[in-house]
Length: 379
Ligand code: MEV
Image (cartoon, rainbow, N blue to C red):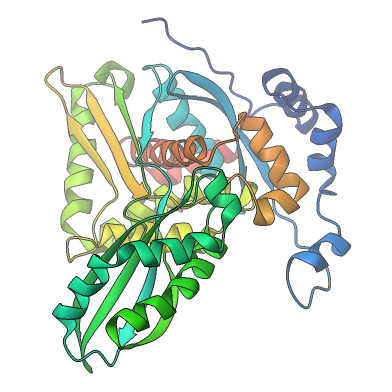
């Protein structure tokens, strides 16, 4: 396989990096200047986004070049305050690119909206009644968002569970909603509110909370990468990666730090596109605890050749339409930089960047150590 040469832009000046971004992305000079000047979001515009605005707050906007994801090369925008993160993520991306890049996939944009049902006398009977009549809930939900339905989305199914709580049994209804290219929170919340009265009618109970779940187990994104042992300094280092994974898999103290390193890559991309960082964080961390104990969200294995196989699978609820993504001019620039229009493709990028961040940092940790590498990066 032909090795991909990815330029190291660390030693470039800001203007040279801008020229590099112009030559290697669809962005115009004006768009890049807007990012350089930090003038994308005016106070007036910010005042239309959230409440009680008195100004805007700036953060460094970096680029991570050389990502190869499903064969497509791109520059990834990263907005964040932590030094060394862009550099180590880029070195992970470069290692991956030299080995064919990341292979990424998703399950599709299916989110869960929850309806909490109270005062139900026979929960199991209620559960079956809701399932028998689920079409009525689906219809009520879909009526509130004909635009989403016209794009092929909307409520597609209903699930019901009975759960034991400290105040007794509850019936919990899940609407499964295809939110297409949106993050989906608003559509989901509107849909569960519209379906709740039907659920009350069917069960004779009372609907309490009606809101989306950030534990988005039907909106998973996955990425994997295979790195030749030679590119890691030999099989001994592959073994060290596997040991680091075993440590994180067994120990929540290490898992939390490992996952923080993964989020170091993901969250700056989420911020750069105006997406909801808290939704991504809560989805990822709840998934990390899905087996009853908090664990690592990345896996590192050695294959039969002695090469390193790495992978990640997490919920990824982000959008490319609506909300801040549409409203913040820099968010639009960030999506354009990557050539992304579909949420599905964007989800693949985010998990690949997370895996690259983990790869870059673990390489430092198992070789020269973090501090030594960080110091040399800052020189
Ligand atoms: C620092 O922001 C993140 C790391 O601690 C991640 C890790 O230990 O894997 C370096």
